[in-house]
Length: 505
Image (cartoon, rainbow, N blue to C red):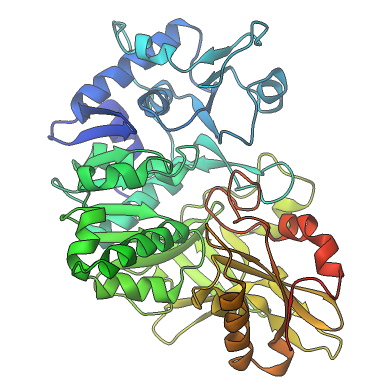
């Protein structure tokens, strides 16, 4: 790797015309990236005067906002590490400070009168940005040093914490740029929590390559999309499913498909990026039909982005080929393993005993737990999770993800999670779409799914969830993946009751 992007962006003030916009319902702030760099440098100097320095750790527990990214870049300039905590999963208390060795914690949560020392309002960062920078010089990072602690989506228990190396960040940024060539004039829209490190990658990319970046929140994204007019939108499949339904509604009103898509996304889209969970093939196909290129990829917290479809190398049904610096190997059990020239890390920093050994292997290899196959041209196809394999009494192994996908693809439900609570057969818990539940449509969808399935793969009962799966309701991760165990626990009584739900007749 010839250039460290991290070291370049913290030491050199941008000379390009790129800008950062932070927007939401009723507010918008746009800052030239050169001015943003000046403010981040002032924040770094202010933090230094308050006792934060190289090797310290700054926690950030807040929704997306300008102060979040100011703190992130300031910490990089100081040589300090960040720990990004997702709101709703963590509380700004003494236990959090102690558990993760925080030298300071900045939060947008209301602070009680007895808030622990070092727990501060993130709004104070705006004042730091106005202080002087006399005598401050940014630190430099080695490739093996870790800039941040990132956390798993936390489907069960306490989220695992993983420190990310500078080398892995630099490598991923260079690799993605080689595929997509982001450039001045691009505006990349991101709305997932900034506690997810990959969301901050787009700020680093903007500072280095001179494109624009717009940051908002999931709650605001549909309201601001048309006025932002981005060229690139990063989103999880659930976001694009929702956007598809919106566009379809506009088309049903007599608007041409391309015009309906532009009404939501604006008229400058160069491409759409999705990953983090399996995408609905029907949704991917829909965007092609309305004239919007969408590219699916694959990666984990432990690997960063590993494979990606992109212009010139795109194969339907796959999640793309390995990025430069990555290698995909399928082991003897059919598990996808990712080898990196610059690993994110080789062990968790915070995890239960045995977790690191199950995930990380010597030589920069991560055993993902996903089942997959490679075609003759190196395109990766994800078949499911190894722990989603159900072994029937006749010893036959069933991978449930394709069954769940077929049910979801009918359009009758938003999500489907299949279980095998008894010898009788598979039982699905489905998330309805918002609004009145169309039980008849779900029953018809069940019949269609079973008609396309082998006998052992047929679903004998469907339990309709009491309300749609949501992040706030605890049944989806922050990247909108169903939390299988939690869904099973919530609907255990009905799963175990052979007469509950919609039955096959």
